[in-house]
Image: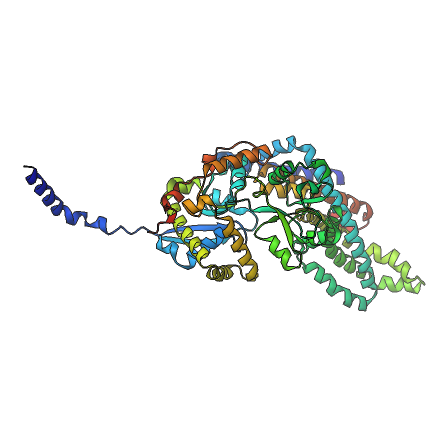
Length: 256
Length: 339
C-alpha cells in the first residue's frame, strides 16, 4: 500500500517536473533566450550527461560534508535539548544562546570558520552543523517535553527511574518531532555545506555553482543545483522511510 | 561678372540668414534615463569614483542624462547589462573577453581606466619568500579558480608547479595573517592596505611589473547602446571622464563624494584605493591620449596571453570586445573636450 502510494507520489512529482521543463524549453526556444540568462532544459540535461562524472564526484563530496555536519549538529542539539528538558535553569540559560546561534547570519561568519578550522572539510562540516543545530534543538526539546504527564506519573508510581522514563517514554514520544527536525535539518545541512564551499574550497557542488556563476556558465550551474535537489529529495525519502519503519504505530507514519 | 556673382552669393546668404539661425542655437537634446551599475559594492574604484563625482557635480545633467547609480553584489551586472536593464557598468578587460568568448554576452569595453593588472600575489613582509622560485614547497592561494596570471608567473619564475601546494582561499585575507597560507592573491588597491592596517605589511608579486600583459577595470556598455544610441554612450563617457579628471585634481573632495555612497567604510582605506588606482590608470598611452585611452595591441596581447594560459575557453575577436571610438572622439591632444 505504502509502496504503491510512494510510486504514485513519485509519478506526480516527475510529471510536474516534466511539465515545467517542457514549458521552459518552449519558452527559451520561442523567445531565443540566451544561455547566459536561462538555459533550455535540454541544454542542462545534455551538460549533465557530459559532466555526469564530475557532478557525481562533487555531489558526493558535498553530501559527505553535509552528512557529517548533520550528525554533529543534530547530535549536539539533541544532547542540549535533553539537558534543557531536564532542567528549567539550563533551559533559561541555553535557549537564548541557541537563538543567538540561529540569528547569526551564516554567510557573515562562514569566512571565519576557515580561519578557525583551516582549509579542507572541517569548516564546511562546522557550518553545516551550525545551520542544522537550531531546528533539531527546538524539535527535540518540544518532543521531549511532550510526554503525557499522566503517563509519566504512572511510570513513577511503578518506581521507574528518570533514566527509564526518558528511555521508554520521553524519547518515543519525541520521535515524531525528531523526524520532523531531521527533515528540516537534512536540507539545511546541504545548504550549509554549499555555503562553506563558497567561502573557499576546491571541491564540491558549492564550488561548481560558484565558479559557474562567475563564468556565466548556467548549464552546469543548473546541473549542479538539480544534483543538489536530487540529493535533498533522496535524503528526505530516506528519512521518510526510516520514519515509517520506526513510527509504524504513530498516526504520522500513515500521513507521510 | 565675378564681382556680381560674389554680391549675389552674399545677398543669398543674407536672405537665408533667418532660416539658418536655428543652427546657431543647438536643439535641446532630450534627457535620456540610463542606469550605471558599478561592478561591486560602493568604494573608491576609479571608474566608480568618476561616476560618483560626475553625478555629484551635475555633469550627467549637463549632458542631458539622468543617471541612476546602482551597485552589483554578485556579478549580476553583466546579465543586467546584456539585457539592457543596465546601460553602463564596469569590468576588467580580461573578464569582458571571458564573457564574450564563453557565453557570447553582447558587452563592449568603451574606456580602459585601469592600465595594469588589478591583482597581485602578496606575501607577508617578513616572509622568507623573495622570488617566484621560492613558491616551491609553499602553500599558494587562489580566490576561486587558478588564474592565468598565476600560471604565467610560475612559468616566468621557472617554478615547478608540482612542488607548489595550491588551495582555494576565498576572499578573507586574514588567512595570510595567521600563516594558513604563504602566498595570497590580492586586489592591489585593496587588501594590502587592509592587511597593513591590522599590522601585517606585505610584499607584492605584481604580474604587470613582471611582464604579464594585464589590464584593469574599464567602462563597459552593451551592443544595443552602441548600435542604437552611440550619442548616449559618448555623453555618458564625457561626463564620467570629466568627473574622473576632477577626482584626480582634488582627491580629498573625491573621497568626500565617495563616502556618501560608501557609508561605513574607512575613509583612509578608500583614499589608499583611490591613490593606487589613479597610479594604475596612467601610463605613456594615457599621458598622450587621455585617461581611458585604449590600445588595440594590448587587447591582442591580453587575449593571446589568456588563450595561452587557459584563461579563455576559445579565441575572441578583440574588435568585438572593445572600441576606442568614443575616447578618441572625446580627447583632443590628450585633453578632454567638454561641450
